[in-house]
Image (cartoon, rainbow, N blue to C red; front, side, top):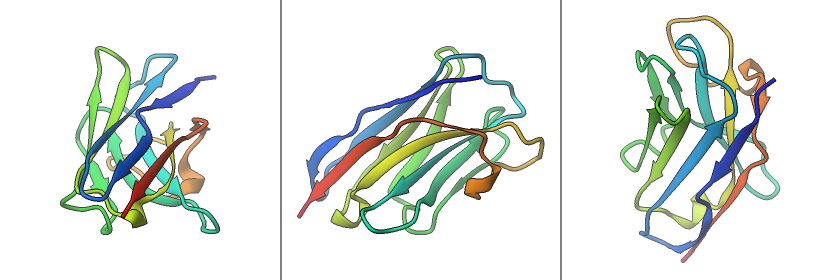
Length: 126
């Protein structure tokens, strides 16, 4: 069992930046995928970004390409989501997740993730 704890959310204005972090309570193996998802009020949870822990594969949703990036810090067992040029449409609860499925690419589907954090709120005002 692993615990994932997100941090870094908050209230910002459009155009600002935020950096979310997700700390895992146990070692993350190189075959795992780590992902970020978000859920806005009244909407379904959606994929934002993912990375294989060995760094061989990363992926971003089209809606955040060019603005968001995902990175990992092996020494701290954390995965980060850098969010730049934030828009009101980015307002959501952001969730960190871990997939232990073996594969060469990271996963974009919610059903392929085994563990989830509690989420952190990001609110972008216009």
